[in-house]
Amino acid sequence: MAYAAPKFSRGRVDRAGRAMANENFTDEDLLVVENWRASHAHVLNTFKQLLYNRAHRYEVIVAQRLKRRPTIVDKLSRFPDMNLSRMHDIAGCRLIFPTIEELLNFRLELNSGRFDHKRRNEGDDRWDYIANPKEDGYRGIHDAFKYEVEPKDRRMKTAQPWNGMLIEIQYRTFVQHAWSTAVEVAGLVTVNNPKFGRGRPEVRRFFRVASEILARGMEKMNSSLPDHTDEELIKELDELEEKTHLLRLFENLNANIGEFDFKKISILIFKFASKDDEESSLEVKTFPSVPAALVEYGKLEQELSGRADIVLVGTSSKENMRSAFRNYFADTTDFLVYLETAKENLGGLKAVS
Image: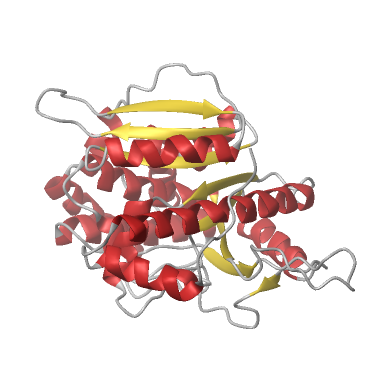
């Protein structure tokens, strides 16, 4: 099955995206958005192979994901001036490294490499959230690339239909990824969604304080609370745990994932807990190719809208998928271990549980 290619003009894509965000869309608008999203699968596969080829000397996890339609619509709703055709993270590859040094070295090698694709934010490190962490405590680095492939015979003028489409490359360390995973899990299993600044203030504050403790205790740098002392941070985290019970929740969380037949392309279906089902659950469907998975992906999003979180992912191994997309397996083990270690490194007591 061939990869989808964009069928509609950028202007039509933008109008469809705005209609979806305003909840005033037609069946054709939905078709346009779905085609635009599906067309990113080819871009995603191209960059995945590029990253694998360049990452063989590093102890790094490389994973890929295609943004879910509800997340696309939510982002367009939060940013009314954004055009869907210029959204740079519909397709995304994530690289997770043991250390910041390895992360920075790989990124430097990649960005100085020779290939046709152009880095959209070249010379602009506004998305370097390690040097400049977000206010909520998020740390990592993002780059956006524009897919560009010249014809093999330069006398030919026919360009690839995917030229000009965008993809986000996301770099994190294991520590930074563990924090982000915990934030995602909190959004999945509670009524709070700290990732987008929603929910109770004490939940958002918990993760901001935890980010500062992890940055200092594990990576010898600051996050978004540099003016607080170590003692103040540890004391506040324990007080916030008394209010939120997040650490206790993570310790007791047990997603029902079972065993599954892993292949490189999978759809993860995280079904929310309901009145009839006391626990949330994870189902995994595997496919031999991205195009085949995309067909089922669209059907599942329609069928399970509002009842499940659905994501299309791909990695090189089952264990890599667990690590890169740990939020969908509700696995916050690393976050708990890193946080305890960071507190001990800063001379603090164990967290209240």
